[in-house]
Structures are given as C-alpha cells and as structure tokens.
Image (cartoon, rainbow, N blue to C red; front, side, top):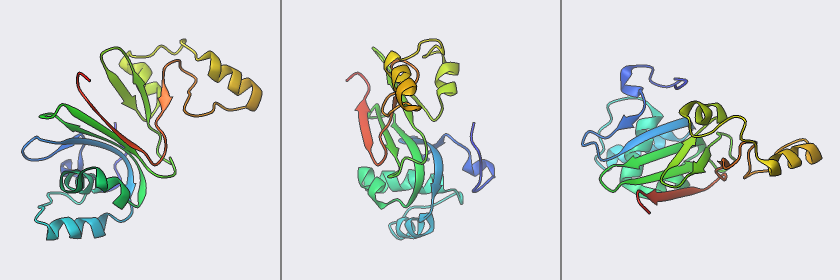
Length: 168
C-alpha cells in the first residue's frame, strides 16, 4: 500500500509503468526538485499523464538511466523493473531517510520498506532472528546497519543504487 500525497487520482497509483510496458516503478518518498526535472524531461519530449513525482522518476529513469539518482533532491526508496531486460534497479536517497530492506535467497531477491512487509510476503519468519543483531542491540541499544533483527535481511545503504538481472 502507498501513502498518497501528490496526485491522488488513479493516474498517480503504483506500481506505475510506461505506456509501452518497458519500465515499471514503485516508489516511497518525495522528490523536491520534481518540477525542475519535469520541465527538463518535457523539453526532451516526454509526455506526462499525471502530476505525480513517481511519473517524473519513471520518465527520468527512462531518459537518464542510472544518472537519474544523482539528479534527485529528495527522500526516496525506488525499485525500477525492466521486464524486457529482466533487470531490477534499487535506489535510496543520500541520507537514508526512506527505508529499503532486501534479502537475497537462492533464486530470488525480495525488497520492501518495512520488515512487516517481508514477513507478510512469506520470505521471512519473524522468529528467524539474527544473532549478530541481537548482540549489537544488547551491547549498544540498536542494530547496526546493514544488519536487521531478522536473519538474512539487510538494510540497503543510503546514497546507493544497484541493478541485478534475473538469473545472474
């Protein structure tokens, strides 16, 4: 589910995809310089259907590729799926304001913004605790990133992006 702040119409709903279905995006956050980026993209020929900053990310990723992440001013956790390439890109804001958690298993990668979503998906059990994280919590009163309290679940680092291709 998504907390909608900008463009509450169905045009702003997620996941959002390009008209040719070559890119799908889910996004948690807010892009503060979205109006400037929107103008640049419109000047480059992009046509927008919504007022959502999600759509700015969608067209921005398509236009600038991975260079998009360095152009953003805001708080965000983003996942871009390119079905034809079978490629997933995850990105997180510089300060790590928006959470992004991930777990790699044998044949899949799962991600979410909350541990509860990973538990609800069935990929994690809430009783599968990370002994290193428990030790960290008992010693310091918190769990040091990239670990989380759940075994195998990691915190995606702030200010980073990564891509992976299905089957690799």
